[in-house]
Length: 301
Image (cartoon, rainbow, N blue to C red):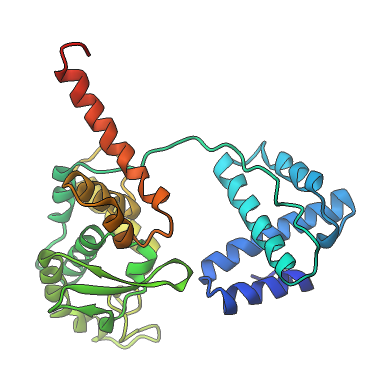
């Protein structure tokens, strides 16, 4: 961040980076949220961060209601609560003014999931003749075959994949490492890509990364934004009338496993969810489908 942080926020930033091991993206979002909150306190309420009250925090969230969705306001409140929890732990405050502030009610939304036939159609779109097509094929197979987050996939290095054991070591949220099995097709696609990966180092470039699993055309580590653009291209080629994000492949992975009778706690482990309640969102998708079957088949429906 270019904005200079106040001393308390700088201490919290260091705590997030070095003690909690939060990702740079997470730290940046926390700081943006808290800088905005501190500005409100100082300019509108004439209060410091240490002098903030329950009412001041509620008032701040109220000012955001005009422009921000409930999910965005909820995230900002989560940043504020984490900050005051840290101050409490450091004995800089006797209590947290944010503790009893209620989060905005969020609309319940189901994960966006692709039917199996549409998922397979996307997987078959990348060219098997070009090095970048082989790369994209491997990326899609890994996202769907392992249920990886896009950030986890972009962070993969060559040594993170045990091809013989079909196991991938990923670094998830909060720098939590987990081992994820992938299917044989994903490994075959990965091997086809790796056989030609070296072609992208033919022309020297300063951003080249010899350790990264997935590379851009210059040999640098591929970014989530680039993968999203490539996926958009394949969805368009499939003539699907919907927006498909890389995260939708993770949702589809979980839902298709659940429909195949996989145990929900096993799916929780595969996805790297800290809470089972997060994984249980996928049961609603299946229940919706069951309801449709029931309504069509039951004589009294």
